[in-house]
Amino acid sequence: MTAGRASAKAPSRFTWGVATSSYQVEGAAHEDGRGLSIWDTYSRLPGKIKNGDTGDVACDHYHRYREDVALMREFGVEAYRFSVAWPRILPEGRGAINEAGLAFYDRLIDAVIAAGIEPWLCLYHWDLPQSLQDKGGWTNRDCAQWFADYANVVAHRYGDRVKRFATFNEPSVFTLFGFCLGGQAPGIVDRSMLLRAIHHVNLGHGAAVDRLRASVKKASLGAIHNCQPCRPATEKPEDRVAAETLDAYWNLAFPDPQFRGVYPPAIAGLMTPHLKPDDFEHICRPVDWFGLNHYSPVYVVASNNNPLGLWFGSAPADVPRSTMGWPVEPDAFREILTTMHKRYGVPIYVTENGTAYADKPTPDGKVPDEPRISYLTAYTAAMFDAIATGVDVRGYFVWALLDNFEWSSGYSERFGLVYVDYPTQRRLPKESFRWFADQIKGHSALSVPTV
Image 1 (cartoon, helix red, strand yellow):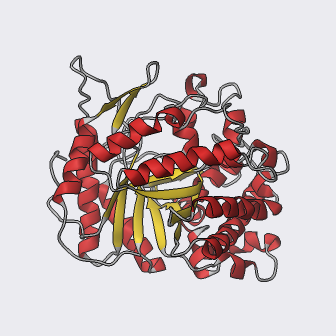
Image 2 (cartoon, rainbow, N blue to C red; image 1 turned 60 degrees about the vertical axis):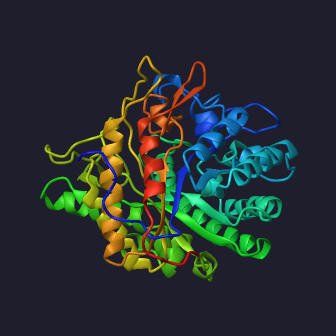
């Protein structure tokens, strides 16, 4: 791969954006009445997070959001996808509302709009209030209603200014790793709890969509799914079965019920004990777009080390990898865009795509990151190829605006277009941000409507 402008053109009125999430960038974890989240708890468990890192300070976006918005404006970003921290709005997860938390997002949203940038608000990016986890969290069917009530608060407060709402970010990831495979909050390894959590999150999605529709005029709604081709790491029959199983949990367990009103066949029988009459009617609510996050394909092997009987294997030796160890295969991006377009038939927004590398500033304050530019060039070219074949892609968001807290990796991995020097919180735009600005300026051709 080589750096430079991708040769294809994005459709006009195409949305170019950047993304963050509350726990990963905000900091101010114990300020202005914010309650604890499951990630505040989990990150303090010995050995769970690399270097013992936490999101207590993160990128201090809570205090430095004006500087971050100014950077987005300088580089021509058109949309900012961020998440609201449930425990900052409702410290106990339900009940008393924290006005100071609501006021922070008022300030953020107003600053984003004043900069000519469209706010895209995600209700849930993994930071469940700890007080609700103490009541069972997503394994408790009541959590769907608690989530809907929270969505109602957010809709009433910000719906006059925000029209783009996502219910959940990557529900397959936070359920699989949080309830079965290990490595994420709340740190449970139990397949029966995984199945309950999947169903209750789906119920929460449908209930929140209804609340948003009722409260926000001209709302444009969706959910965000991490979609990755699941490939057997070898030709062994057991690895093929493992890849098919992971595909059902990873790629289909949420979009299928939300768009089709069914669970995929591989897990449908397992979900039956958790279903009540009319559940799919409440889950399968009309939405306007499909949010697709993608980084790489997944290679899968059979394993006896967890309740699903599978684990993540190695890509072929000749496939390049990021510092996260994820294979860099742009063709997989084109493949999954095409697959999801054909399966669900709604407009797609790429709500996350990016890569981690060991970026370092030079003495003159520049941050060269040629590998990231090469990655983004190749992946956007693959997206344009998909568009050329008829895949209805309406926007592209880079993960992430800032280097940030990367969950179990702590601060050891850098995905940002902006370098963050954590001890000083100094921001340094990387060369990839300048590349991205060039893409935004240089792409306009076809004409498609937006939703």
